[in-house]
Every structure is written in structure tokens, then in C-alpha cells.
Length: 127
Image (cartoon, rainbow, N blue to C red; front, side, top):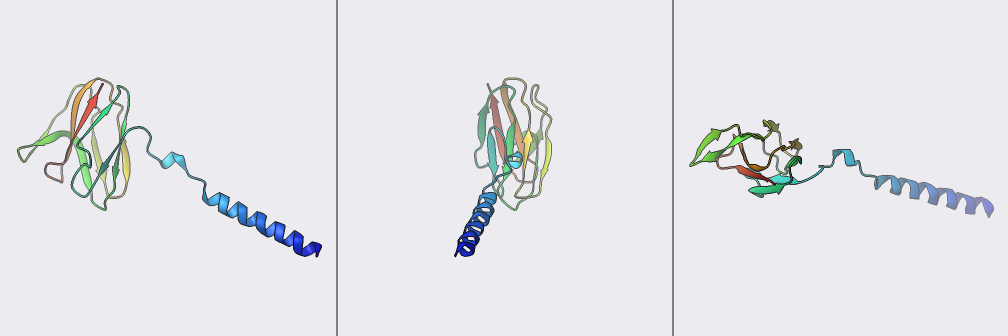
């Protein structure tokens, strides 16, 4: 009887450890700070407001590639631009991935766009 009881306790303990281990989350891969999500051909929010010194995390939620750089689409034409105070951006996304941009060290309004998808613009307002 004692062996069955001990076996049940050991089995329950192992099960609890296995289930508890599944709940551990590696936060080093989680985006920190403000985030902007991207769909197949657009930013899901066209603008974001952040504080001076912050970075933003761009999250590609689709299996669609993106190339993000400084500038914007204006009347259907891509216009690269270097804006004082904005970090220089040239980032490739392969789909279902994320990357950080920043920090933004000066206040102002800055523009980023996807070179692949027409009219895919993001405005970053830094206060």
C-alpha cells in the first residue's frame, strides 16, 4: 500500500513539474516598448506616438516580406527621406518576424514606409 501511495506522489510531482515547465515564457524574445503591427501590405496602425529616447518594435503578423526605410509614399511614388533626429532605417522582414527601430533621440514627426507595398506608410510622432 505504501509503494502505491509513494508511486502516486512521485507521478503527481513529475506531472506538476512538466506542466509547470510548459508555462515558462522566454521574455527575451518578446518585443519591448511600443509596438506597431504589419499586415500583408499595410501597417495595421498608420501612426504611433512615443516618448523621446524610446524605440519601437515592428511586428510582421503576416507571411509577407517587407522592406522598411525612412521616407513615405506620396501620390503613389516612393520618396526616401533622411529626417534629422530619426534613426536611419533599412530593415528586411521575411514574414512572421519582428525587429526594433530606434531609439528616436529627438522630438518631431518622422516617416517610415515599405518599399515593396505602395502606400504602406507609418508616421512616428516623438514627444
